[in-house]
Amino acid sequence: MKVLLVFHTKTGHTLEAAKAIEEGIRYAGHSINVIPVKECDPKHLEEYETIIFGTPTWFSGACGPIKSFLHKIPKGLLENKVCSAYAVMGGSGGHKAVEEIGIMTSEKGCIDFIHGPVIQAGGFMSMWKGYAVNRSDLIKCREYGAEIVK
Ligand SMILES: Cc1cc2nc3c(=O)[nH]c(=O)nc-3n(C[C@H](O)[C@H](O)[C@H](O)COP(=O)(O)O)c2cc1C
Image (cartoon, rainbow, N blue to C red):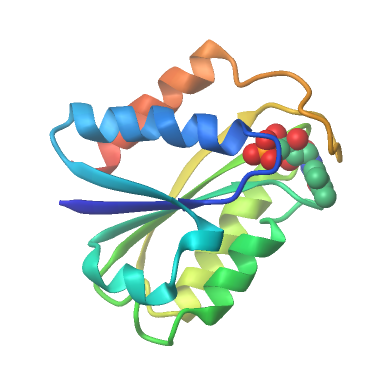
């Protein structure tokens, strides 16, 4: 199965989670590309069966760069694909961020959306790095990676 993980990060936590998810997917014997959203063209999505979106929580929703990217995806391109999202939050709003991505992927044709993990790291409404992703959340990310390719 070909998996793409497209993410945005300002202070590194969403990338740290992405690396743990990548480990889980590779451990399960599948290939994955991890690409920062700013380097990803919506056309890249065509070649993947499963697409994971990784976002920091911004203002109780998904971050701007991920939302802009989702807006640019042509209608219907996500038909027959499994989509999923995970979010990192300093305090609250991560579930809303994931749900927002779920709605946006459905607008592009996805009917199979998996609500991924919500991870605590950073600081609430903070531009500073704050506290790191903890060990149990990294394990949760690895398990989610291994599970999504089953
Ligand atoms: C503009 C902005 C808005 C944020 N809004 C929220 C928020 O609504 N809820 C929350 O829990 N954290 C919020 N945060 C904190 C980030 O979600 C948190 O620090 C996260 O770990 C950052 O991920 P990153 O290291 O991948 O950038 C916000 C951060 C920024 C920069």
